[in-house]
Image 1 (tube, rainbow, N blue to C red):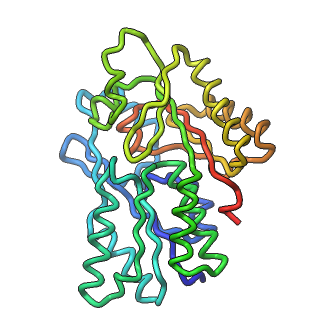
Image 2: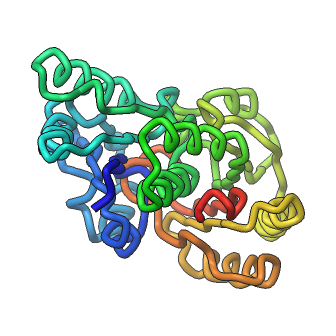
Length: 289
């Protein structure tokens, strides 16, 4: 068992196999339906039914960060076992999750339970980007690095990370209030397919006019990653499995290797972006060794 435990939240959308292989602890966010039904994101496994409900909803479900108590419940046993904790989370510009994690660490420190041995990290990204950074932390832990070295490695990796995602429409982001700097695109008379990234908040990259062009631009971005030596890549989707399979096939030709992460993004981010998202990106493979 590594001396440093890696903790993240459910918005990394890491495949179960990677979570189990690396012993990563996951603290789930919440989906709130109509104000009267609150569910752990990780308890929602029937994604098609969720998307049916999302499309039909007059009012979108809302999302909620984990509570301080949720984090304490995960941190406390790890600290009691003598382990340090590297805790990596969705951008604080999108969620209060990093702040809840910070408050939990402070509470455990006040109570003399080792909270000072928790290192929180606001990833300033989400989904595949967060997932890749978790794997960077896990690789460091498994190599026997201490908490300071892992923290430094994750921060360096974040500087080399680039992720892009394309959505069918900005309407869900607009309705959910998470549109960030892309708000300037609302009201355009053009029917466009937005391509965005997350750098603290949702950040616009470009607009294209067709789904075919959107797909090819994502392939172009993947090629940029390969050309810059960032060959640890990830591909993700929301309710777009066929398109994601095509994107993965094209990217395998570019990178000459399988993705580090290939998964479906779950309900919390889906509630904000809507179905039809495709995402791709990566970082240099050396960070995972």
